[in-house]
Image (cartoon, rainbow, N blue to C red; front, side, top):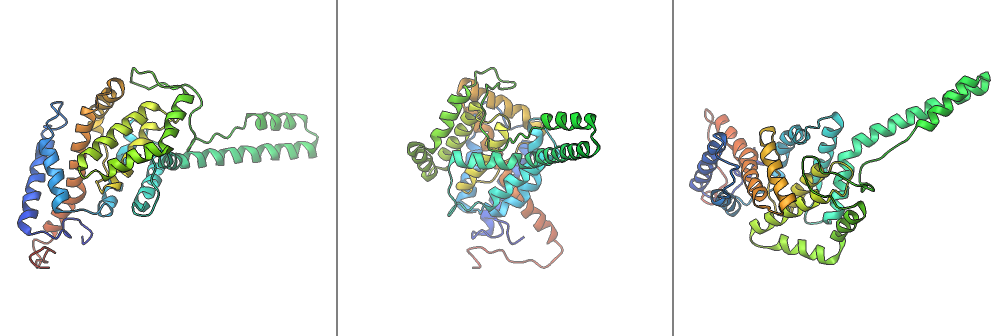
Length: 330
């Protein structure tokens, strides 16, 4: 429990209790379906986030373990695709995000997107590689037997098997064909144009644009920038498959750059997410999507920090109280 951000916050207990009450009221409101509305009234949400970051000054690492357990089970369901390989890929991507050192490791939207996509598809690529190697081994075995036995049928089978073998690697490869956005009525750029725009994130101007957004003292300006960028990247469809998964994961790495909590989308939020994403992609109206993510950040703060803290308090009810590390008893 000592890793919990609230437990380690150097503020007085009254402030902790006030924040806890505010987030509990938020959670009650969410449970009564009073969030994810289209009125864009995010004042309460922004106040909660602002006060949490001013008072708690959280450490991202202290949230990530709880997050990974919840996220991996939900992310594969957002697009209704759930296979063992996809879950393993998400786990690998979040191991990478967990180990990413924002003070030392190089961050670039293009470079990190490729890395994330490679990890998301590594289990599937490994599975395909194993199948390829097994079929190749079988073809060679048949060929050797055909030579020894002078068996023409086996020789034909070995040739047919060899000609049918193809190993396709998905991870980190940009698309080379046209693309269609399922569920969205929008024209997707050609493969050449998508590659050109995606590569532009390596240009010094784009690098400077990101660094300026990250340095903006207004954390909400940074959130807005990240959400808009990720929506634009999804619309670009630079990969043949897995674009939404890749860029939702990238968003959480971008959030880590400012110590924002990682977020995930549960099944009942799928429709709200897709409607907001469609509006951002098709109409370039990002308000709904930004609103959605403000609420998701509040969700994560509550679920990854306040809920573990509440469980800790419950476990201590019948035990001697351990003093909190506050400004009053430092």
